[in-house]
Length: 157
Image (cartoon, rainbow, N blue to C red; front, side):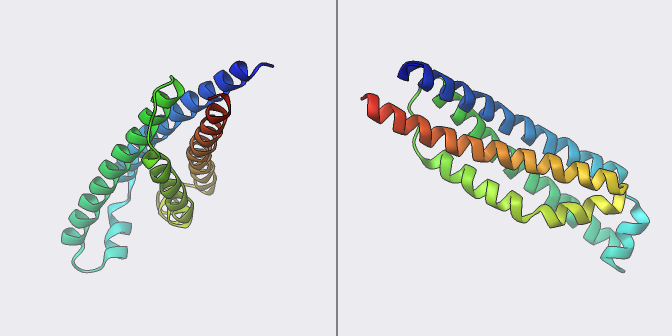
């Protein structure tokens, strides 16, 4: 396989991984919407205590804020990866964001399992964790493919 073919393969991988990052951002939005829709209000009140209504509004506002930030970061990483996969030069900032997002997502797996267990069956918890792990893998693939592509491009000049 020629060097140009190897570069094209890595570019294609980077483009696909960037699309996956965007898709998992959309999934996060849908998942949060489903959580808000399907959560048992009595369970939520029991968790939040006596000031349940005020805290419930705060929880929903916090979730909305987190989702907006998450969507913006995933869109930035995904679109940057796709652009670099199509041959445009991109700075390293999106790779740092992708790495931090992957680490943050890995740290939040426990919280995902806890939140999902309140509204779902055990199989749903497992499915949510598998999907989240796949999203983390897509972010990692973006970082790895971009670094590989940059090294290959340096060698070719």
